[in-house]
Image 1 (spheres, rainbow, N blue to C red):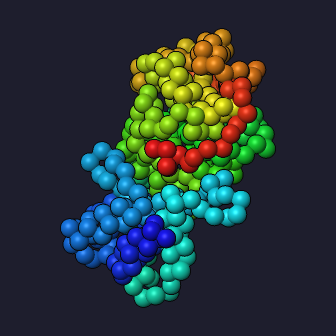
Image 2: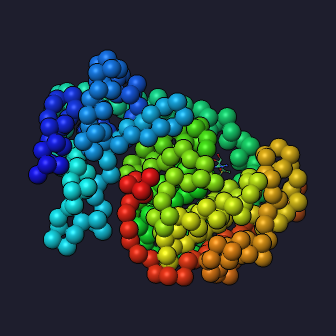
Image 3: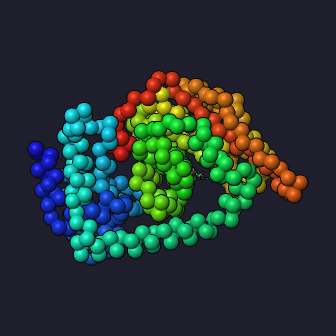
Length: 344
Ligand SMILES: C[S@@+](CC[C@H](N)C(=O)[O-])C[C@H]1O[C@@H](n2cnc3c(N)ncnc32)[C@H](O)[C@@H]1O
């Protein structure tokens, strides 16, 4: 009762209901919300503080910006057999129930959604401009190996029909893995240290209408997640940038639940030097023994790696790269626990 009443008190005001509705659609900063609502920044901040304190809204910092979003809905494994939520989950259930009751054809709500669309379009344009600036050099690297579609299909094939509670994509970049794997997890999060990349990933998830995944600014050497809180970790074309790949894998294994898996996708050893000189690759690929050794050191069992070998035609002037997929698994069975959002 107490949790419900304090949640209802916090939500029971027109601007705060509008905020809940907007924050159920996407993650927004105070400045976005000030623009959409047409109210002063101190006022909007005060409303957000009340909603956050009542557990209806969550906030996270990314560099100089603070983002707000609706708390995640209660997952099926967090609700007990009688369909009851615990006191901790009550605000989450309340927040989403209120949003469902919002009249989406109300004139004020419609205007909010129109302005929200404009904010999203501006974001998408910034992300697209960044992407366009880098597309050429990324395209050159991609032309060196088999198509991304073939790599992605091999990744899906390796996981089979398994479904995962939580997926963590490390060094998510444009968030592509979150999109490709979307059918395979209940909740996905991508982490990256580049604000521009995170901007592109957010815009991509938004334009795909994908609501089961989000991205966060975080260093892969110090993941902001609890031990044993993730079912599947993916590390796609990231290890070759790192000074300490083995340390990155130790950190990934730390957050893995018993029975959870780590999938690494990266190049086999090669000598395409321009990747080091012009694209900051620290390592020119990895051999199976090295990666398997690192995964074994993390306590994981490793399946036979899969090699995706490109066909080199005589017209190709550049050496082609082999992409390898490594899959490691913790020994014990998966046990579902808390969501990533509540663990962070
Ligand atoms: C080549 S991109 C790969 C992106 C994505 N995984 C994909 O394959 O499309 C490598 C990504 O790793 C990120 N990265 C590099 N070092 C990182 C670190 N220490 N913590 C988090 N992300 C990092 C970069 O910002 C970049 O977005």
